Length: 492
Figure 1: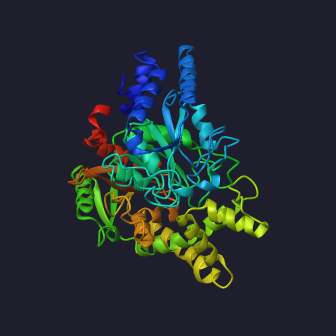
Figure 2: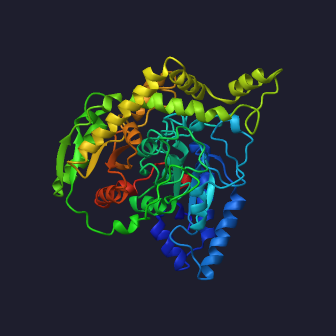
Figure 3: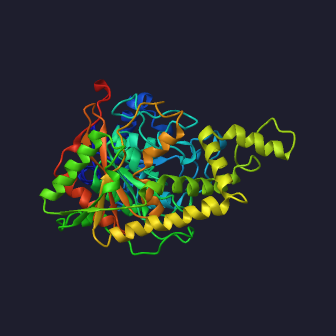
């Protein structure tokens, strides 16, 4: 039973129901795997083994009593260190919150607990979700399980790496400009950003409130669908939460995929795309064509403006959201302050990392008197144009296929001194957040150096079932879901 950590949810539920193994056995397998490879991967900031085993024991008792809570009961779920779990540290990978313990559960965590999931560990990330490589964490650098010298992507790098390495069955992350899809692509797993407002943001430490969204990581599309079903739902505590009927995404995958019109935007296949990435995504598109789907070339003409628009809007919202961390209440407080101004300045200077400081400064600047109209207001107008591009495209097609990232995973430190180059890592994912649409990254290839390649599938608002079905059709006919990183063979 030592290899349970690489099983999918359906296999695990069958084994649990048949009493082939227990939830404690499963949790023990995941713990042993984590202990074996964590020194190399560094996916976790913290983990409470005793608490996880207690949760697994409770799951076993429910099942014996005939009161199982569903598909996630007893399944270990890793949590990005930006979601509040009552009684657990909530650091956001920052010294600013190094000693903070969450006093309540985020709504998504409440949903997971109600589903019987085992809440397993705090996963590493870029500080306050600001980054594309998980190199901005104040605690450690997470490695890509496929090549330990490479980054896993970000900001949800620990969430992606832990799933790829078998350190958890599934995990949750957050996506503000690609922070689920980009690391999913670079680590060879499935990652999905739902439609904005579908999953509650209550209990999520906000980066950019009009862009942030919670979503799943998994090794298969079906596992992502099962986890998504637990995450979504109306929440009156979140003013942006949408009151919509819940859908059974995993059941939708059982239906044959109808013939679709799939859009391919020319702007995403030009200069700047790594040749191996482009070839793998085009090969995947050709497969859909061979299956009888219609491939339509489309245009998203304002795509080149997505990065500047995003880094105005996101930093403006970040500067406002992070103003609460001032050294007065629950965040880091400088011990070397003589007055209130020094307390603010020194606490924030000591608590925040360089990338967070950079974004706060930029955001404060674009919101300042004399610059608000020139930058922030204009960016919001261009955001409307970007959204209109998608509206027009979806009048012609059912879903859109693009590369998830312009390159495979790059080496640690390669872009640390070049913020603009780092920001361009998210060039294909940012537009989806600006438009509030759902999108998914699916493994579709490997480079010659055995690094994963991801394809992004973008859907209409509330089109989660459609894009999951599109992804599932490809996954079912290819072997990528079964590939595993070659961590030390003695630790398998």
